[in-house]
Image (cartoon, rainbow, N blue to C red; front, side, top):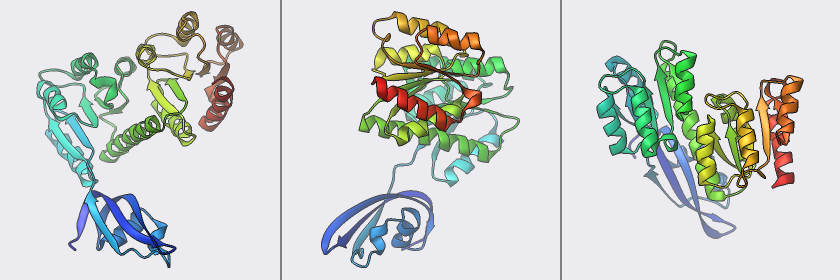
Length: 322
């Protein structure tokens, strides 16, 4: 068989265990392989392949569906660098150098992820985000913004619009772009898998994307479903569309303060009984007392605990209430 590089595959094998033919299915992402069997052993480590009574006598490879990324960026050199980096590890990348064509490309291709520059000819990145919000593409489809300035006001604005993460153009490397893409897509895969399994649904209202990623992994490992909101506007939309069993709520958010939102939650029949745990960097006594008096189940000061401890406390309290 010819050598192949940088392609994602699914491997299917038929083996015998205790003399009984059985099927295995394992997903393999391989960058190079001399033989099919070697690739699957290296990548999926499927133990039955090497059992004495589990010899593979039929196995074949099927190319898996590639994740599709739309990149909207006006600098040709930067486009070439990022497209090369992403395609090298198996992503399909479509690109555009202006906002008008870029928006049309998003709507035509229905990508798994969007990389979006802010300063663009024709239609800038903020205008594109507004359009994507209107038609429901955002926040359903994850967007990573490439910011030229990194000014706090600009970052707060894009997070308020439902953007998943951002990069500062003057600082990032192609490897950082790849890492951000893979973190966001891995988060989407965990969310989709959790939705299929069902289970307790936790809404995390927090604009610190790194912390949310860490918490999401902890919750998914224990079979929770996680939905994310970087601001109160998005949290309201989620609560209007689906049932939520528990909420982790930050206090300092880009649009509406957490205390205001907590009061809103506890004043409405639909949401008043949902347990809310505040997670905040504000840890003064009067702030903690305000949160607890407002109906929070607990008040966790983020600076004092690890993400693992936030999960453990939330898990214990939510299980008591759900």
